[in-house]
Image 1 (tube, each protein chain N blue to C red):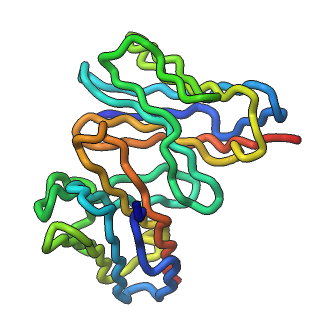
Image 2: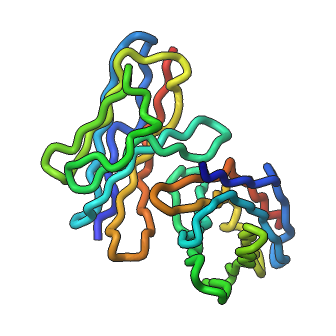
Length: 114
Length: 111
C-alpha cells in the first residue's frame, strides 16, 4: 500500500510571496488533515476534510491560508501572502475512520520564509 | 479545549535499558483515543501505540507499553530493552473530534 505523498519536500520563499503544497492520501482514506509543525513543537491541526467537505478549520488563519480537496482525493494547501512566522513543516495525514482513528502521515514539506 | 502536556523535553536511556515518557492531558470527555507517535529525524510520523479510553487494560505493542490512568488523565509510554533505533521525538496525542499533540520528548539512546 502506497503511503501519503506530499510535494514539494522543501520550499524557500520570500515574505509576501505565495506558496502551495500538495498532498495525495492513501487510497480509500476519506479523511485528510493538514498540520503545521513549527520547529520544537508538536503538530498543530490546521484543517480536516471528510471527503471533499471541511470538518474543522478552526485553527486555520483564513486571512492567508486556504485549502481545498475538490474531488475528495488529493488536497492543496496555499499560503498567500507568506509571513516569516509561517516557516514550519507542513504535514499531511489521512485516515479511514473505520480503522480505529490511526492517522498515516506523509513526509512533510519544510517551508522557509525569508 | 483539550490540551496535552509532555513535561520532559528530553530524555536519555542506555541501550537495553527501560525508559518511561510522561504525558498528561486535559479533557471533559469520557470517550476518546490516546496515541504515542514517533518522529525520527527523517520527519515521518509513525504510530507507536494506541489506547481507547473505554478500555481499562493497558495497550502493549512488543517492547512498547502504556500506563493509562484515566482518572488522573495520565498516559505514559514505557520502552523496554531500548534500541538505538528508538532514538527520536515522541509525541503524545489525544483524539476526540480532533487531534491534539503534545510538544514532544526527544529521546536519546546511548550505546
